[in-house]
Image (tube, rainbow, N blue to C red; front, side, top):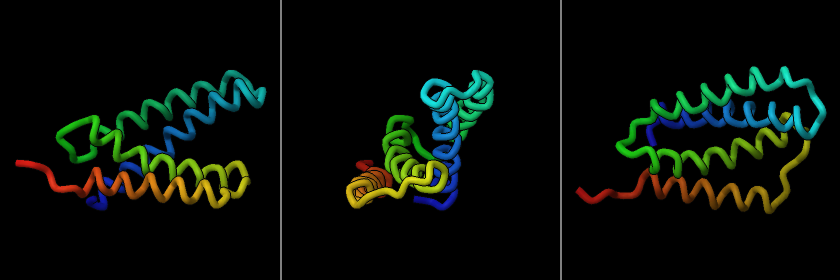
Length: 110
């Protein structure tokens, strides 16, 4: 995977998680509905960023992104929600990253 794609995936993951967390905060944590405004903007930025990944197929891009998203979600859990991921979180993330690497780096038929 090219470095620019990894940076795009990481940025997209941040904005997707932040956007979804805004909705979580509103519904589950009792925060103001005003949280939905930056949440919606974050989700738009997330979707826009994924269009910059160098790939001929949206589905493959989204599938590979999924592995990055899982790892980024656990980082969010740890850094923002202050809950340490356990061993099973880390094993699951490793499996997802391996899957994403297979999707991104596997040879394609010509």
